[in-house]
Amino acid sequence: MTSTSLVRRAMSWCGQSMGRRMEEWKSLSIGSEQETSAMVSTLRLVNNVIGLAIPAYRTIKMLRKPLKADLIHWVQYWVVIACLFFAEALLEYFYLDNFIPLYELQKTFVLGYMQMPVFCGAQVVFVRFLMPFIRRYERRFDEWIWNWSWNSPQDDT
Image 1 (tube, rainbow, N blue to C red):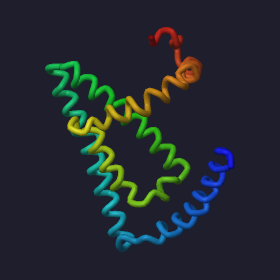
Image 2 (tube, rainbow, N blue to C red):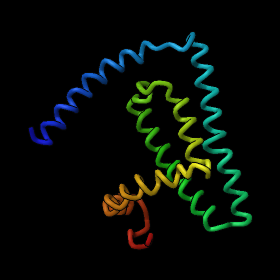
Image 3 (cartoon, rainbow, N blue to C red):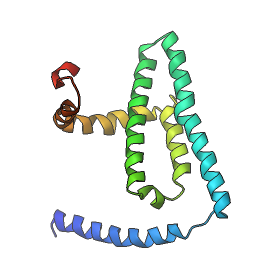
């Protein structure tokens, strides 16, 4: 059995299994619709505090007495957060966020992991995932951005 057929078989199984799981998650109910809506609204507020307000305040404090390590941490954090918010916008555009169980709660934990220097979550995501992706597609991104901006790709280096 080749690796390609193995991958196809696994993807087929995952697709069938995912379809069943989606139906199960759709039927999951935390409470009444009003309770669920209130919980989601509260989690969105918490997410904005954890993901935006606290990091913005800590960034401002860091800028008063900048240390290189803190500067690198917060620049990586804001780049990762920008990418996550872009990915979230894509999920919402295609209504895929509705299929992720307890989406707002999971987002709360991810944002906490990203912003806390103890975990270095933003650095892990930046170094392991984001930078390899950007390196791979950097020329395409430069060309695309060049078509939409006034600067040449060489001006950014």
